[in-house]
Length: 68
Image (cartoon, rainbow, N blue to C red; front, side, top):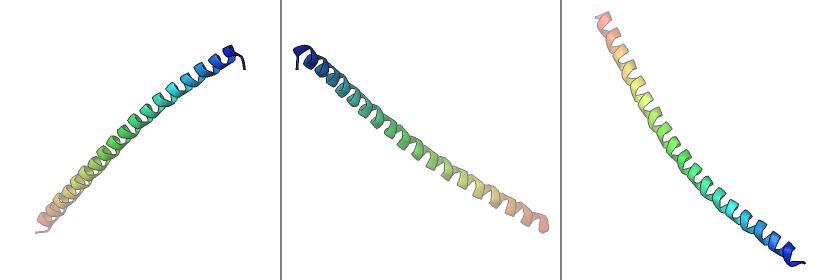
């Protein structure tokens, strides 16, 4: 192989390695954000369920007052 071809291949390989490293970092960041969003989603679901049960309890209480 000629020196020019080897140099071209080496340059392309270096760029590919840099791209791979950047994509790995980006992937790790995306996974971390996904994990944060999943935890936030779980917290919101819990809050929603708590609010729902409180509203249902208040409705039941009001109904029991109405029947008395």
